[in-house]
Image 1 (spheres, helix red, strand yellow):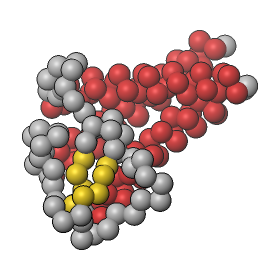
Image 2 (cartoon, helix red, strand yellow; image 1 turned 60 degrees about the vertical axis):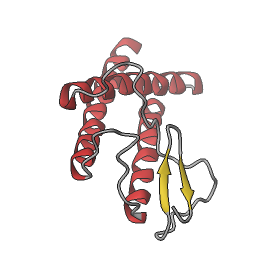
Image 3 (tube, one colour; image 1 turned 90 degrees about the horizontal axis):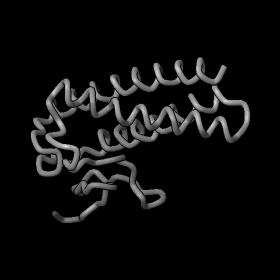
Length: 141
């Protein structure tokens, strides 16, 4: 029974990775991003809000898939971690197939664009500088 559930969670994770990778392809094309950590477009508070929501929703959807599939806390988390791991692997496989990125397994990436500062609000008159792990607001840059 668990094998059948793993199969369907896997199908979900691989398909969801395809959807997420296509969003990244669209964003890179729209903002002419060639190098992820150097080609940072002008800050747009609405886009930043939507992007943080998309990233957070990704995590919630993967957790929800595990929660819906398992029966106990342990199996629910197990299925969620399985979904996350497979999603993450296939996200990069799809990006490699679509845009030949990453160049290597050591290429830097923004893992999740979710601010670490609780209650961070994106002011429209400030510039967002993105590093590999979070978004930080740098006034006056």
